[in-house]
Length: 348
Image (cartoon, rainbow, N blue to C red; front, side, top):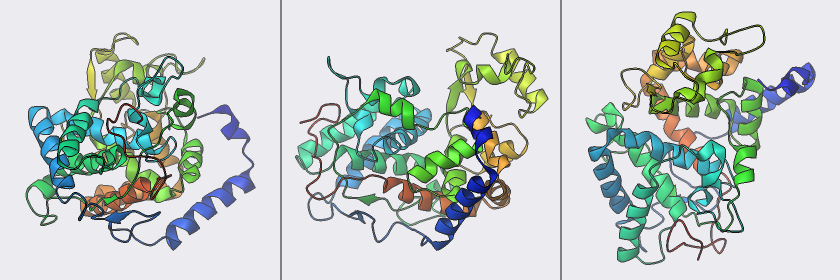
């Protein structure tokens, strides 16, 4: 938790929480239809009817070859939307005069750029200069999480094989800044107040925060990401006291060095390639990998949602789709704004 958070006046904090709750209650439940900011389901129905099928084919092939690909694809969309909005600035390469988002420290572990490039290459052959890289990111994230969800794979969720319908119609931005990525991306050591502030700045609610944190059901991390929680947490506490002591001891045995970038740690041990509600059980048991996971227990609303999703995976999956649509509307460029990049890593 950042030092300034302890100084936030109680009345101001109560007001912020109340406003976020009111916004969440007033917002319509989103199931993917009726787009925001010019977005709509099926935007490419006339201009490139096979757009989503082409992206799905590429993502499915990548996941078949490496099931761990799902988490990086989901993460790319998150990291894109939290900096400048969902306009594919995370894909732009650095130049001699500019250090781009993908080279910012929080993004050094991003992966799966090749999957996005492969989808873009196929789309350019089929429908030149039509489908944006920003939409490819959104579609690929939806496809990745759908392929990782057992109920979807088994046909028990939807007829089209999707966890949720994704809105499209985004255009690509032309600016990418590593400094902005450092400033705006949520940090694994953020406390609950800092997390709420970051999400609120994007128009996202307490519920969105709790739901989207469930993306940590997928993927792995490495020892440097949790080193501070395990050793020398403070001058007086060797281990983060919010982390279950036995789990911390097990993690220390695996992470002998804070610089160990080789050892992989599953975010949810035993099911890091399956998207489900198991993450929330770990959080409730104080076994969430990051300090930001444990932070969900520090607010009445987010703590309540942790327990709700433990009890009902169906509720979590339904709400996750709605919150992904909400996040996908952040800072979008539409109409005549931005551009449609020919190559996702380079502005036109």
